[in-house]
Length: 385
Image (cartoon, rainbow, N blue to C red):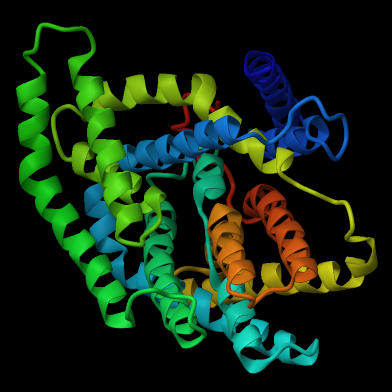
C-alpha cells in the first residue's frame, strides 16, 4: 500500500505543482491542495500513516537543510537587527490578539494565554519553498525571514515551557529548558565552526561512493536530533547544519545532491501530507469560529511581522512580503496544539478548529507572498520540486 501511495503522491504533486505555476501561483500551493484531494476528506487514495509521517518529517528536515546550504552567511549576519524586530513583533501582536480572542470566546486566562502562544508560532518551511521559486531565498528579505523564524521558535518555545510548567504539563523546570536550548546553540556553533569542516575533509577521500553527500546528511540528521532533544524544532537544527556546511568548500556538491534526493521524493511527500492529514469531519458547527480565528491568525502575523520589518528599515511592500512569509503556522503550531490537548489546555473541539486554522494559514501563505514579493529578475530557483 505504501508503494502505491508514494506513486500517487509523486505523480499528483508534480502535476498539481505545474498547474499551480501555470495559474500564476507558487507550485507549493498546488501540492498542498492536492494533498486534501488525495486524502480521506475527498478521494481517500492516501491515508496518513506512521510511515508516511516519518517520510514527511525527513522531507521538511531536508527542505530546511537545503535552505541553510543556500543561505548567504554575510547577508544573514547583516540582517540580525531586522530578524529580531520581525521575530519579536511577529509574536507580540498575535499573542496579544489571541489572548483577547480567547477571553472573548469564554476560555480561562491560562487557556487564552495558550491560544495566544499558539497563534504566535511560525513555520517557514512552506515559505522557504515559495522564496526559492521566486528567486528570493538569498536576498536580504529571505535572510531576515529565516532569522526571524529562529527567534520566533526560541521565544515561543520558552514561553510555552513556562505556561506548561504552571499547569503541570512539564516534567522539568523552566530554567532547565532554557539552559538546554542555550546549550544546543552553543554546541551547534562550535560543531559548525570546528567539527563540520573536519568531518567533511575526512570523508572526502574515502574510497566509497557519495562519501561527501553521506557526510552532509549525517551532519544534517545529527543536528536535527540534537535540536529536537534540546526542545528546539528539528528543522532549526537542520537549517543550522546547512549554514555550517555552506561555509565550507563542499557546499555546492552537498547542495546539488541533497536537492536531487529531497525533491525527488521526500519534499513532495511533506507538502502533500499536510493536506492529507486535514480532517474536516465534525467541524460544521464551528465554521464561524474557524473563520474568525483564521482571519485573526493571518492578519496579526502579517501586520505584526510587517511592522517589525518596517521599523528595521524595509519599505512597506517588502515589509508586508516578509510578514506574509511568517503567516504559516505549519507543523510547529500542530505540535503545540497536540501538547495543549494533552495538557487539557485545548478541548477536542477546539483542537479540531485549530488544525483547520493552521491549514488555512499554510494554504494562504504562498499566494500572499506572491502578492507582495515579485519574483527576482534573475531567478535563482533552478528546481521547484
